[in-house]
Each structure stands twice: as C-alpha cells, then as structure tokens.
Amino acid sequence: MNTPNVMLKVIVLVHFILSVWATMGGWLPTPYFYVHIALFVCGLWAIASSDSIDAIMMMLMVLAFSILQDIILLSLYEPRGYNSHERDPKQPQSVLNEYRFALGMCILNLILKPFTGFLLLRICQARSNDTAFNIPGIDRIPGLGGMGGGRGYEDIDNRQTSGPYSSVPVESAEAHSTVDKE
Image (cartoon, rainbow, N blue to C red):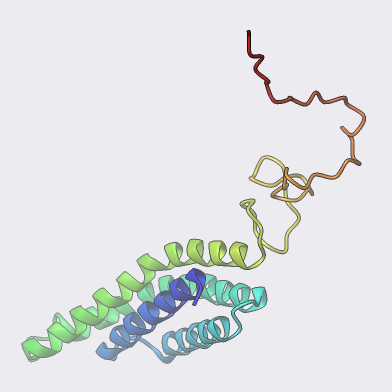
C-alpha cells in the first residue's frame, strides 16, 4: 500500500465520519447529505483506481463545491436551527446537546476541507509524477510555481546532449593521482 492511498483513505474516512455526525441534528437540509455522499463516492473511486488522476480531480471539484455549499447552508439554516433548538424552553437538554454537537461537526468538517484540498492536490501531483506546484490540467504559468511549459523535474544523471546549451563546452574533473616520491 503506497502512502498517497493511505492518506486518501484517512481523508475519506474523516470526512465521512464528520458528515454523518453533522447530519445527526436534523436541522441541515438534504442537499448537505447529497453532496457529501458524492464526495464519499469520488473518494472511493480515487481509492479503487490508485493511478487515476481523474478520480482525484473529480473529488477535488466536488470538495470545492461542497465548501461553497456548506457556507451557504450554514448561513441559511443555522439561524433556523438556533431558533428552533436554543430558544425553545421546552427543548430537553439532550436535544440541545445533539444540535450543538452536529453544528460543531459541520463547522469542523468545513474547516478541514481547505487542508483536504491541498492534500488532494499533492496526491494528484504524486500520481502524475509532477513535482512543480501547479494546478493539473492547466498550462503552467511562470511565476506561479510553474516552469513555463517545461517539465517540473529534470534528471541530471540522464541529461540529453541536445538542447539550447548542448554546444557549451563543459569541463570535466579527473581523479587526482598521487605520485610517490622515492
């Protein structure tokens, strides 16, 4: 088992658990559940096809959408949940605790998502054997970590002799020999 797959399994498991705990309160609408199921399915796809960049990119896109959706749903539905749970004097303490726990897990899940996105980018780079920091699928832009259309890593041990600097003479060092004086 390679390291990116272990990291990917941890990412999928953590977000799945936090999503399940966030939906326990019953105050979040069903789109929250649907987008996190889509994120989970993309995560399983990325784990199952350990060499696919498409699976990681799809998971990254669903993750980006889920960040936006979580912000919108929290801003719309948290005040309703607060009014129905916290302000109602007839609510038992266990219902209040369940609401607070679900809200905390929803917020924690949202806080972890940008870090997850960064890790998914790194996993995608590891799968594509690319060491430059760029967004896969977009041409590299000089100044933003790209190489301006070149490759991210040049193996200097197996350098080809053709190229813009192939005519430049290069001195090579020779081993130093000692002379015994007699």
